[in-house]
Image (cartoon, rainbow, N blue to C red; front, side, top):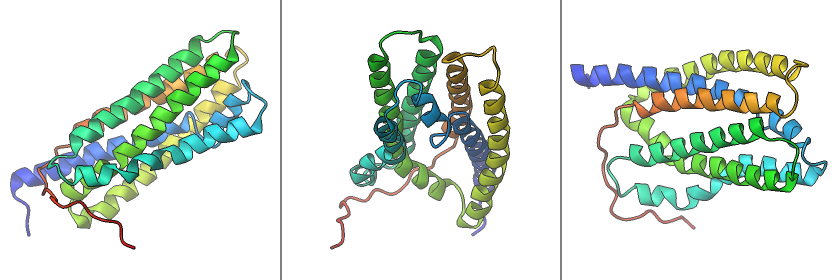
Length: 222
């Protein structure tokens, strides 16, 4: 079925907003890559590989927890975007606080710093899990199925290009003798925050239509 002109405009608008979100999000996270930058950063605070592994597991797996209860709850609301907005801006705030904390931290009690980092990374990861369900639902509603492959392909392509640029910046920042620890990592985390803010502004601008409500919660199959 052919879309009406207003719907056509919304599709194009949402496509561009989603593309900007994907590109800037991918670049933003490249400044503080969980599998490379973060573990090296944490090694300055603790020599325990177990502790570093806990932090990495928190980022990789912490987002799975909300999936256990978010999906059923969101089936009962027509618009999922408000939940998505709360989740993504909590993530941005957590990363911004992390960047400020690291950038201005000076020699002191590393235990308190590690606890703060643990809490902020958990909040970031958990909020990401909350955002996953409404995020997927949003694109299923605002983009025709025939456009989604091209949409996510462009996000991956141009996000990858931006991530390569971010990786070059990471190399220059960490290799700059005038930027000493922790200012160098603090700068990278603040760059991540800035790019996340841009990506989330784009995502917040997506125009979501109302959806159907599923009155009976789905049950897990056995």
